[in-house]
Image (cartoon, rainbow, N blue to C red; front, side, top):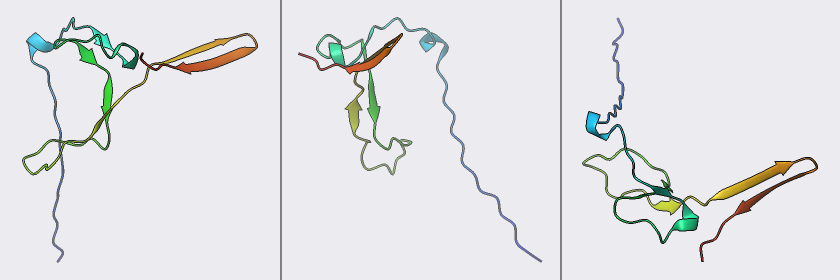
Length: 84
């Protein structure tokens, strides 16, 4: 006779009812100097994972650049912004 085992992992995230609507302004890289304490800033984390009691370090964050693209008959292009 064989021995059977089952393992698994589950992750669940929910927002409280009071947090489902937010009217906080959001900014990208171009307006880096404008956000205050209540505003959102667009960024990503490298190799982001779950936060557990055994987690030694948080994943490093980096900014998400604002990219604008244009297209039309006979032309197309992309511009990445740098804040002044």
